[in-house]
Length: 173
Image (tube, rainbow, N blue to C red; front, side, top):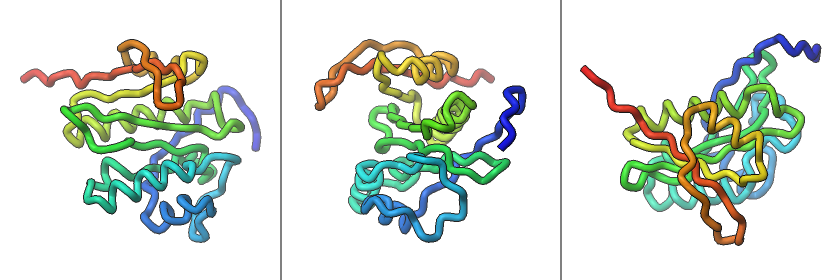
């Protein structure tokens, strides 16, 4: 691939099917994957398991499934993203990851921007992204997209995370 830094790469989100989620839950690359695959770009098994568990319990797939982040030009899966669960009190949490070899090319920004659009179109009023303070690249992504620092918290694994919040602006008539 010709690496021209001025070349803009476009990305799209592609819904992961239930069949693919079942494969991913078992850490198996789906046989019917119609894309090229960057190293470590697929959702981890625990993400697929969480999605399937929620969908099996009756939660809408819209809020529980995940998406491949695909480079349109070369049909390359560069990462994955999605909502962690249905909104609670209007708030939905997002997660995303990009293959190390595909970082710093705009994929995370494009994915988070798309997730914001989907969240607000689906009725969420605010979107939460939890980011390690050490993850400067991800911090820049959420800052650039208008998320505001909503404080720090320690998760179940005793990891310090910053809560970044994007709030839907009310439309005026």
